[in-house]
Image (cartoon, rainbow, N blue to C red; front, side, top):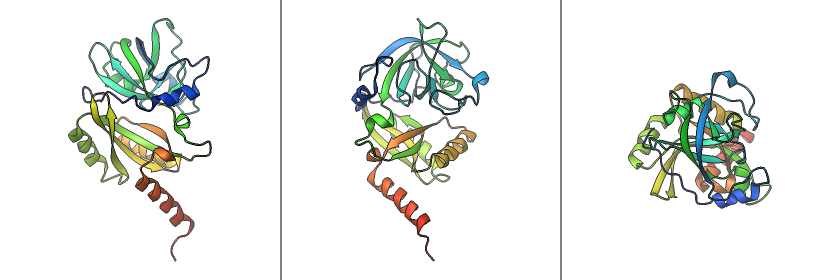
Length: 240
C-alpha cells in the first residue's frame, strides 16, 4: 500500500500523557527520527511484552519506551512510504543509540526496508492505547481488525468491496487528519478477541496486511455497538 497510506491524525493523542511514566517518555505529539530494523523468523510464535504471540505477518513493532498498544506511523524517509503499526513489544536492543524501532517483516516490507535490513525512518504517535482513551475505568473493550487506511476514498472503498462479501462487519471510518479527511477500513467490533483473531488470520491468508486493535466502547459507532449487544442478547436468549 505504498504511497497510498495516509498521514495519520494526531487528534486525541493527548491521552497518551495519562499512560506515560519515567521509562516511557513521550509528549502527546511524540515524533522521532532514527533507524528502523526488522525482526522475523527467529521470533515467530514467541511471546511479546504485551503477551501476544509475535507473527511476521502482523503489522506490529517493538519500541523501547512507548506504551504497549500505541499506534505509530512509520515513514521511510528515503522513499516517503508510510505504514501504521501497533507497538506490542520492547526493543530494539542492538545499536540502541541509533535504532528506534523494530518492525515486523510485513511492516518493513510495506515501506521497502526488507532488502536493506535497516533504514532511516520517522516515527510519529498516531493513537494512544485503548486504556488511555477510556472515559471510565469500567468501560468495556471491543476488538477490531484494521485492514488499511487511505487518503483516497476510492481506494478505501475498493478494499471494502474486496472484504465485505466475506466479512459483513467491514466498514469505512472517515477521520480528520493533518492532510484532510482519510479513511480507515475496519472489521468489527467484536466482543470476543478470539473471534477477531480468526478474522485477522483469514484476511492474512487472503494477502491483506492487518493488525488486531483494542477499542473502547465509547469510540465505537453507536449502531455498531448496538449490533454487538443485540448479537449477545440473541445468543443468551435464542428464539424458540
